[in-house]
Amino acid sequence: MTARHGGSTVRVVDASMTLLNEVYRRPLDPGYAEAAARRQAAGAPARRAPRVVALLLVAAVLGLAIAAATLALRQPPTAALAARQLLEKQIQQRTDDTAQTQAHINALSSQIQQLQRDALGTSATELARNVQAESVAAATVPVAGPGLRVVLSDAPTSDPETQDPNDRVQDIDLQVLVNGLWAAGAEAVAVNGQRLTATSAIRSAGEAVLVDMVALSSPYTVEAIGNAGRLQADLARTAAGQHLATLRATYGIGVDTSSQKHLSLPGGGQVVLQYAQPVSGTPAPAPTTPRGNASGAVRAPGGLDVASSAGRTGRGGT
Amino acid sequence: MIAVIGLVVGVVAGLWLQPTVPIELQPYLPIAVVAALDALFGGLRAMLDGIFDDRVFLTSFLSNVVVAALIVFLGDQLGVGQQLSTAVVVVLGIRIFSNAASIRRHLFKA
Image (cartoon, rainbow over all chains, first blue to last red; front, side):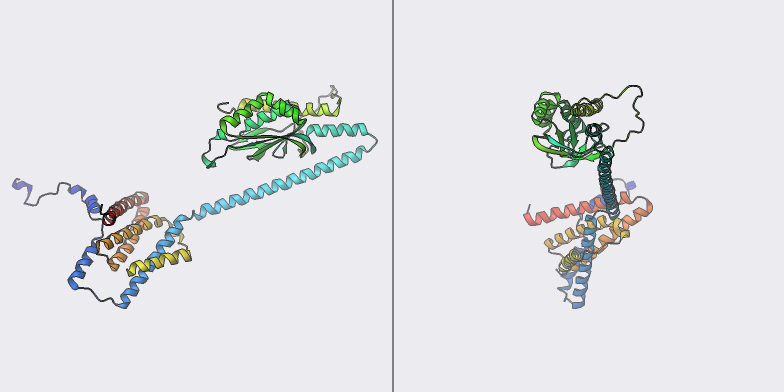
């Protein structure tokens, strides 16, 4: 070493790392060692009462503060909580509003029916029967009868947040099932109490399945009125039956089919057509039998709707 | 020992009373808790080393929490609050880690 290197002090090799070294080599507060050295030098100091009380007080306050801080950290932020509560309240309110409006619609529907019956009276029984048949066909009035009930439920999961969408019941599944039921001769179909009318659509928005603009969730109960035995047999024979089997086997979706002696389906309310007008000149097809008309009229629009939707969305892997 | 007893009393009181922290102090809580943890580990190690001192323990506890919060406050004012928080967490994390290692050597002789 030359004189130019300056004196005899040897530079530490890792001088640039002093900060990290300091942190790493002396993790313990040096105060402890100093206090210990002082104690050794002075002998055991007498514990005075005020000092003990002060220590106790400071420690208690510190403990309190840390406990409060920890508790505060474990709570979700109050702002987010408030916003969430507000949203929940709004959802609740809107749902109540919808339910109220629906009840109102139902009441008005039955009133319309009553008025129709009164207006037609007993004189025009033929006309009254036609109106009745048309109402059943248009799914505006509640109907009851034997039929088939198919319950589709999402595959069981521990965490709904991360569940593969394929393991859930999708709009396409309900479309295929409903289509199959219509094809098998169902005369009236409802999904979770939502009656399918000539203007109903089954589709999905986000992760919810919408039937007639009403968001439904699993389990989906599809009820179809018709000859239960025939419905079941025909459903199994068609592509819909195959689709259901695939859902059960591949995706673990619950498919529970049961024939019911008595099913009661609600009415779909009045369908208001704003633009469609009967084409003048062509006479409306005279209903031959009320029953035939019913199944024919309802089935066709339902089938069309389902077919068009099915083309748009497809379940991967089926 | 007095400090430890006082701390336990304070924590129990905190859990029981559930005091609310002023909203302005909320950003400094995580760092303050990490600093408190560092002081706790330091105290535990000193106890095992046989050089524990109530006064040093409480002083380091208090100053750790206050300084950590202050650094974050300063960082926030300068616009580098996030980075300074990270720095504090790294330094305190290293200290906690090596103190924990020392405690482990004391307890398990390994």
